[in-house]
Image 1 (cartoon, rainbow, N blue to C red):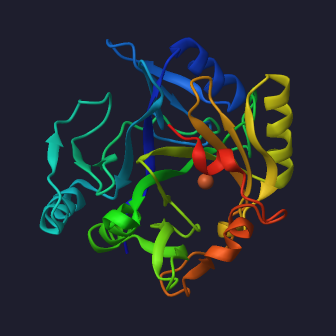
Image 2: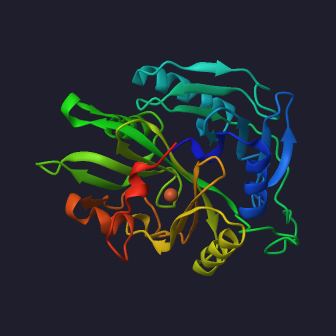
Amino acid sequence: MSAVLRIGHASLKVMDLDAAVAHYKDVLGLTETHRDAQGHVYMKCWDEWDNYSLILTASERAGLNHVAYKVRDEASLDTLHKRIQDWGLAVTVLPEGTLPGTGRMLQFNLPSGHEMRLYATKEQLGTEVGSVNPDPWPDGVRGAGAHWLDHCLLMCELNPEAGVNTVEANTRFMAEALDFFLTEQVLVGPDGDMQAATWMACTTTPHDIAFVGGPTSGLHHISYFLDSWHDVLKAADIMAKKKVRIDVAPTRHGITRGETIYFFDPSGNRNETFAGLGYLSQRDRPVTTWTEDKLGSGIFYHTGDLVASFTDVYT
Ligand SMILES: [Fe+2]
């Protein structure tokens, strides 16, 4: 068992804060819950109970500030602190209140350079349908009506000539220090043994984080969960109505079996809306491997074609 419960929030850099807030509100359906003294905006989905799952910060460029995962309790944070240090990463403890309504956080950089944080405590606002005799969905759902932030995909520096594979290093770290488990992988190279991409879980869904190799490290996408394929289709309708830049229209991934759309927020950060739980992810389930020649089908199952922008464009 991993002490990590799930993805807790992503902190994104955006170039136009108002446009970003409008996008996450009107297209994805999030609600603004807080704005701090620095002007950072905190938002949540209707089906999430914690105070926020998205932080928007104004910046000169797009990208990820950090991604945070929630752990079971404060005692687990102490255990993980030691395990992360023993694995070889430097950990900074950010005191309670560094982020609003949030307990102390462990801050460290993955081997790929991405900043990750772990925390155990965040103020709970409850879901919009409450916890007593709840309706299946609340009134006034906007846009795609995203249920929750589901996972993120990080692009990780991969340079085989220089012997750099931070996909492999991140995957080892997440397994050895945080007890995530591997569900799927892409193996490439002359011997078919180089991990070029991995999908890892701490829950029972096919992935709670994914790493894909690229020339430089960055953010590929953050993903929001929807109920059904029909909701994915409707989300695309909403994006078309609102002139959102769609990267990949509704289709299915071979990897994770997810039903998906990729699109961009106004600053160019890629978002995904994603439906279908795929399969029951278990620690003893055999790892699914995708080979280099079938990578296209893994990413986009129907056409089997890799869309150039999908692998080349990220923040
Ligand atoms: Fe995804």
